[in-house]
Length: 257
Image 1: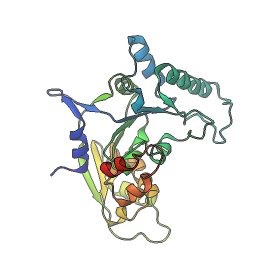
Image 2: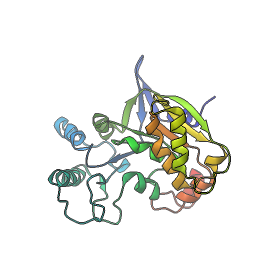
Image 3: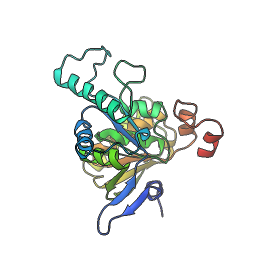
């Protein structure tokens, strides 16, 4: 039986290396200031451009002060943020810079602006990229050399993980949150119990969760070793994404759904 993960993965396969990894097409690459500088340097050293810059979104989030002040006092953090801005300008990549209304934590901004959509493959040089799986996407954290791969080709070489379904049933008691559910699963699975797997969360408890709860649950998937955690899109997903800035509009929305 093909899982949701299988269906999305198979729809994005470009080629398969014999006795090796899969060449997987990536719909959305997110970049931040910490894991992208060397990736951009790789392109610069090879004299190549970003292959599909319109599929890439960058924003500083690891080194930005929480009060969004214009000056970053830490010299290393300031250098990283300035370098990201320069790289985005050079390679023509959409950049939600610090201090702008669009800037924020990548894993919050992506879903809130509907840059992350059901059926997508999404990667970022950040372990908590699994967050975006809450909208029904395959979302994985990758390394800096892999960020360079996607910048250059909009593809990545990946071995397909195994799949695991976790069903949670019943109504949560008052005061019990999605994070409590995640911690309970981790307690049962251990911190390495899902290593090598992509996890799909299902069951009545999951279906009754808000998108914020689903995002929290998917975010914490990596804490038990999983590469990705995803939830099948439903009316809750569609209601959350509809009419957001980068969601399809009108007839395109109806067709996409």
